[in-house]
Image 1 (cartoon, rainbow, N blue to C red):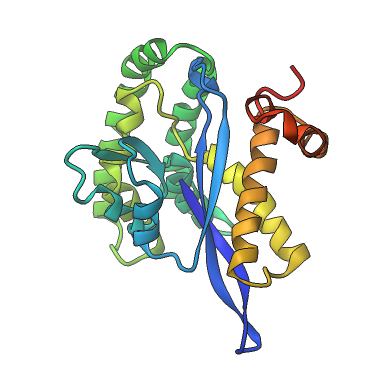
Image 2: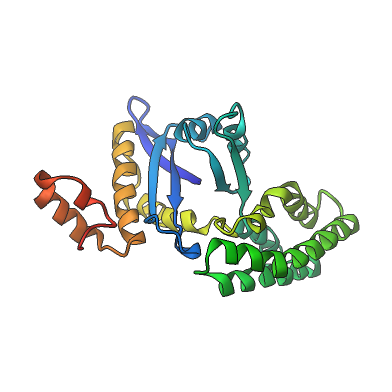
Length: 263
């Protein structure tokens, strides 16, 4: 899950307000799952965690997110449908990478070097079954993760907690349990990049379209983005899909789903 700004014209004020598009993505192909990939965008008027709670009503399981604290609310009051938060190593890596831009940052560079080994293993197991992925992660990644944790503890003691390096290391330590969750379940990815890739066209559209005219327009934006990005995930050309839907809509709905289009 991820969220991004969606500027919306605020009638009467003559300016825009900051709405948000929240995205939920599913892609089981990395572990050989049979469910078709898809993404659903929902418009909400703010970034408040309560909107994530509303979107996830009835959902239980593992939710992969970044470190935005608003997601902590989705775990509350879920005795029947508990949610576990798996955190994103791409975000953790980015915290260290930013320290190396135009700077000599030996601690960050060492952290990046170790994280690279996690990703190298992930590349090797892509497409394997969930059980195979879990087994290999336990054999190969877990020892490296344990070594990384020791390095993390040592490195935090060497720098000021309020320094840029200290803050980056603090971020990783804060979300450590969730960053390790992918080791226990082969269905979980190492990062949240699937949904982040689906968000990039939203950012591009913001630059081209400037804003939605009103809240209803933003809701329509979310609906169309869901269709178009789900088409892309299923390797279906969006324009062809929409053309086919509009010409065949009277014939039913099942065959119009992106993963069935063109069969």
